[in-house]
Length: 215
Image 1 (cartoon, rainbow, N blue to C red):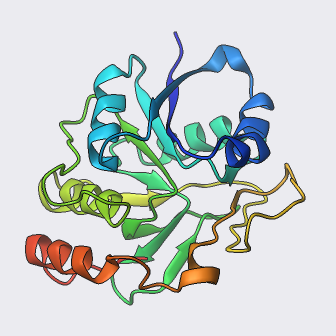
Image 2: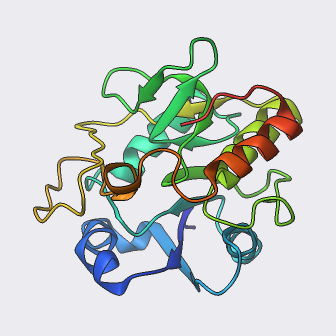
């Protein structure tokens, strides 16, 4: 029985072909399912639909501009073996104590307050639901789930123990390097951390959970 499902929202087909598609093709197709959904709803609604339709034990919710190495599923399993009662697993998080960024690392994992929305792993049997009412844009809806896991269900969030991991904020890099785990995001480099209505959703997050540390 397969343990993992990759779920993603269909955005730009060219970005998918350049990054996520190439990474998925390097994995053993017998080990995972794929669920997709068109970008016609709020992201929180789309993610809830993916969760409801998932038939495997774990779901990996990823953006289409993410690349990762062929041993990704092995790395996730190794992390799960270390922290089986985790809340969320991801690539990059924010330290609970000092607010510093914690990256996925070859030699260690980190407990973090929140994880970035580009890539998270959830256990489908956990009673979780993305907040469709308050987070109706591409801001902080995953961070809200991390807070829910920690504050409501008393579960901890961690970065993934992974080999040759690196995340970049370069604008859609042309070269695909399969030994790296990379987020090819144009957001920070083009628009800055306060892009869009970020401040609006950050205030919603604070109103719900207090002074939560986010990426």
